[in-house]
Image (tube, rainbow, N blue to C red; front, side, top):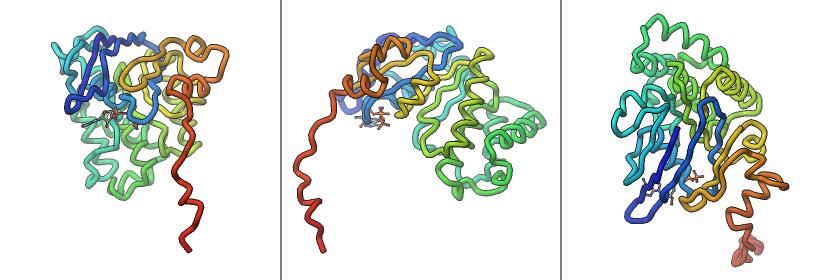
Length: 249
Ligand SMILES: Nc1ncnc2c1ncn2[C@@H]1O[C@H](COP(=O)(O)OP(=O)(O)OP(=O)(O)O)[C@@H](O)[C@H]1O
């Protein structure tokens, strides 16, 4: 996957500013950065959910702007904020994802059973998605992103709200996927996780890539968290909240 000079502004304010990234096929790639740094905006442009103001994106050699359908077919996406059709049951939603991706109904049904087992959602499949917890919804949408066995998974904070057991399962699924040639691009606030599983990463701060490379290259002699805090501008002293310590009762 290649991003060249990718820029996106909202109301004249740049959220992503001329980003260049090259992500090799078969890598487990992390995008990290402080709140509001531009991670979701970047992933949304890669996924084809947002159009860049300028720059080019290619996925598995296919230009996203010139051949959007072909490029999007290669990807499974877990978007930000879990916006979905939550009046459907889990089974109906996964079925919809599957047929939308052109799979035969019989194939979809057997994959739903496999994915539900893997993500521990079998008992929840008959329930309406709006009644799921945040973690269950995330797992369901992750399952939906995988149902058509895409070459690339673009995942916005896949581990957020997910319990440790489910996180370990998701990690196993993603690791095996990468070992078999798949590419994972994810955003995360979990430095320890990124350090442990990602082969490459980019640190984005205020819409710019401030560091990029292998985990060892980016962290140097420090932990990734220390390096991240340094790149993000350090931890500022908290002042002006003295009233919080006076207690209103
Ligand atoms: N649709 C939008 N309209 C206006 N501003 C937006 C929109 N989407 C994002 N932004 C702005 O762009 C900047 C980057 O946002 P983005 O969601 O990409 O950050 P992020 O790195 O994913 O943050 P977080 O870690 O909090 O999820 C922020 O300043 C945000 O307010």
